[in-house]
Image 1 (cartoon, rainbow, N blue to C red):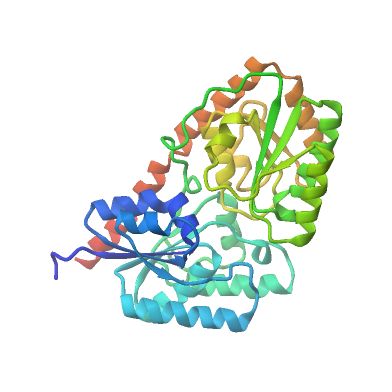
Image 2: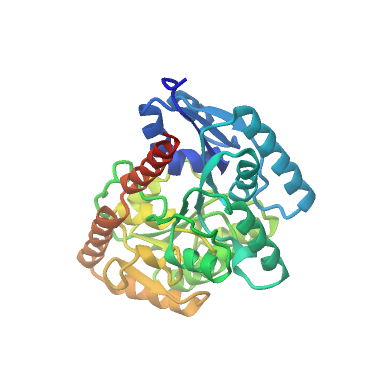
Length: 374
């Protein structure tokens, strides 16, 4: 039994998240001879994960759902699958897996390490729902062997709202890190057309309304600008808004994209006016790693990626005028200044946000748990 590889199970909302942001962690475990299971809704990259050597258990988390009955069913699914698989360690990500798989791990006596990938709106925003969700999160992480946070404000929130377990081991990560090999510093685009890039699910809290309004204002003044949008949309109202804006000629909507590299290559600047409660914006990490200046909101999960005036510009939350002014400031820069700003962002990613830092932290904590078994 001692010679059998350890069984590590990772939970997350979906396989797209796992492959894009955690595959290096899983590969590191596979390289060490571990059996690896992924428990998540199968969206994209299921075949790629299986080709790596991962087994997949398909669980639909309904991450936007707020139905308590469905959440109870989700908990029962986690409990049943974890009892059947009974891994040595569970690595959980995203809110519902952290809460419900975490609770199942406690009952089953399974060691687990949750990663707080963002608080989510119900947790962060005051109100009756916050009281319920903070209690759920507190219960979910109560038995964690170590808790990973992606920004210090999320950690402070847990502490201030008495959600942190007593004697909890905590580690602060640079978000999910960024794969510097998959996102090299691309040559800065030349030419008279200036391409701006917005990448996100089409949600109000991700700043889409701000981006659309600013795009219209800037394009009217600078016709040589193109404002691109990539991201899935399941809101009929926004689908119509995007169609109207595209017909008006000031944005181009590309829908959800599996490969963002062509868009990063053409972009002169990454714009992310989000006020969504995220752990660390991967859009900004990948944009900066690609040597692109970024314009982002001055809030946790975004501000950490930007040195204001050096690698990009920070703007206040929900401030349309500030976004317009930041875009105008960018338009007044020379191509050499824009390129230098992008290269400064790449250097920042190399210093502080290399995904190898995240992989190393996971492997260290799993090894520490192995040591505790001896």
